[in-house]
Image 1: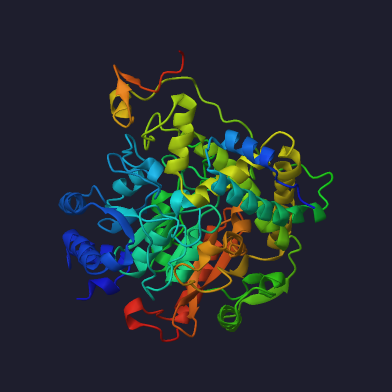
Image 2 (image 1 turned 120 degrees about the vertical axis):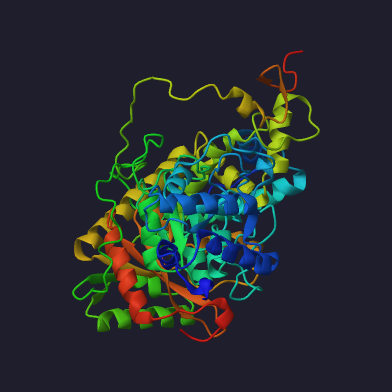
Length: 490
Length: 97
């Protein structure tokens, strides 16, 4: 039996039916890691011994009725900005070298209660700042579809691990597109939930008003099932929302006739690569053929999204990252003169270039004399962007957008020009500014065989609508294939 | 026209950000920040008069709870993460002469 072909839900189903054991799934994942991860480098750390021991425990738990959920026994990888008690958490930064959390994230508790098996920690851009996983202090991750290319970022390790079959599911975090963009580059499915749906307790903060943890998987149903495991009110996160309805799976059907889709026409103007545009337009056609109504509309605030996002994200980052000072945990400089110099040198040596760039920008826009002109202006702009999306959702069930303007760039190309890299986030940042849920589903490949994803965006709390639309489209699209099957067109 | 980042501003930013950059790094950072500010200046085109700054999308009411301790003493485990600790406390360089 080809275990690698199974989705997470199929794997769990087979375990339940005693066709395979929990250990078989864990073995499959570790054999792929052994085979591929030296090249791909999706993982920063793996927990082989613990995972096999846990597999035995979960096997028993499934038998005695402790674990009854649909993902019991499924291996999962965790982005390395989410704390697992007793396991190093680095955020791919030198400054967290040696840090071992003494508590763990709410999402990890929930995974454990669901009988899932934690395989290891995945690589990412340092502190989730970047779009390529190249800003990691511990080496780059390669795209399984073409190892000369980046996997995207910042959750590049999680998405590459799923694409390479090195895990069945993964957790990522999304502050400005960090789940949806690498999912697109890696040909996997990734969901950013409505702000407040998944507890951020134990997620190392980047920009707290934008951060959300979300699932990465092989298909839409897997992501919905994982969202059900991790979503829910948590008093330990003061922005957590007490949502009554957390059933994301039961309404996943392939019926989208009459559903109204809106496409911001400005999103298809300059800057979008012709091949991505072609795949996007093709997807619109498929949806129309399925009886959906697809209309174009105008988003007037588009060119203000990136400026507002980078001001707000950098401002929050500069404040959140103040805590890294070489006193309580992580890296401390070897040489310094006095306390202040110790702070400064530890931070200067511990943070990478991109993180420092954002801390400096953030410090500036929050500084006296510039706060109103930059930070408050960005918050006012955010209000206008939110208003435009609110108006769009009065007319449409789901908005459609590319996940990124192009397919995965070659390794080494993006960091030469940070400004250009920021502009690549154009289709994803508004979703975070407005707290909306968004999902990326693979919808095509470019002429070199690199995956292209489409993004489906819902109004706040409307995950069900985007999951249904994404699932219906996925069914119509058919099998997307794997990196091994190579660059044939979907 | 965006604010021109001069050496004094850069110095101030480094103090706020608690970073000590070399002259070369400072020049590069100055250039990068100038480029970013020139770009985000775009926001000036947008009329935001009468628009309230939106910090939290679902309203920013405070969340209160009873002031009851729920976690136990975890100090030893936490100190284990410190680069330097002494007698149950974090150790830092001498600050008073």
